[in-house]
Image (cartoon, protein in one colour):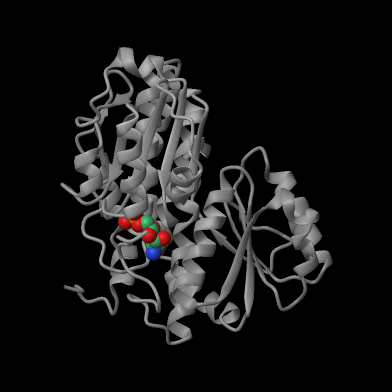
Length: 361
Ligand code: M6R
């Protein structure tokens, strides 16, 4: 049921405030400034012994995991990283008993993720799932986990599930943080930020007409560059994946700091750049990157908290807590990918060559 929308992608982008609300519902504990995650199956004593977190997923879920790893490292101070599940499987990794493994998947059926989980279990590791589809194979095979509660996602191009995965990682990071050394004040700060998300998402979605106009200016690009720094980098990667899978425009994502190590050679008027520019302590560094692009006559679309002088166009998103900004900054770029694909007459819900769940190796 499309509920009045022309495509599932549009419907699912529009549903994100409600989806995030569902992910938060019944989980916040104001008394202890933390969250309850019923199915986690990890008691406080075990949570204190974790020395590393390794997140495994594919595609969009891997990108959600990259943001999740940063959140866990920042809030719970546990060294964390994300890796594509297939790479992990094939490189014969050292499986460490003090590492908490987290498998991320919308469908819960992605073969490479499932096989990684099975291999980890066989070696005695503790594996949690961060999954959307209830009762799916990955949900069943993991020791416990978090359902992301995005609701059914039909479009092959994942949007609302990505957002809910990142929100779920924020919950996990807060939970682990408050068992370890995150202060009550910081716990409160993050909870307040989480509560603001649904309203802020609706605010972003109200800007759709503007974004639609912008997409007309970018739809004739043959190739686009996406850049971000630290928290903004996985946002850039996800936005670049969104654009290429639904519009078939070639896109590359780089950390802004890597530009001068090679990709800057690509910048010219026909190669626009989308830059993630939050108002955080890296703002000045990001502005310097915009200047370098402008000096090569590259067109710039910034996603930022305030107008960016060097950018040709800026999409302003509302500010949240810096740790939670990545949740919001990707949303306008889902709309950009959508409207670009629409302008190009693409098959939005079923892009060529792709399947919703990849159950083969
Ligand atoms: O169901 P999963 O989350 O495990 O799927 C993983 C990827 O196949 C998926 O995210 C893919 O990259 C999407 N088409 C992205 O929009």
